[in-house]
Length: 85
Image (cartoon, rainbow, N blue to C red; front, side):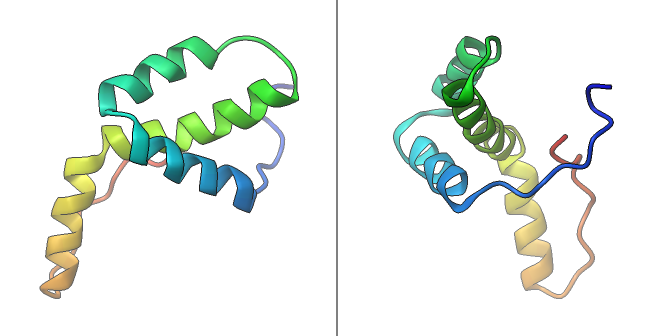
């Protein structure tokens, strides 16, 4: 059943692509790409989708991540952030 299999970590290629996408697209642009490639089938679509999910999650939670980073840097407890699913 879809969603019931164990997830494997993203490949180094997907992580690198996600970093490149974040470097070249705004938050709005990432979300637009996510919507465009969120449907369909095939290997290229899966690679793009995985990179866009990673990039979009970071864009969506950017302020939470920055706030937690500041708290952690000061030795304070951090707030939980909704995980990537």
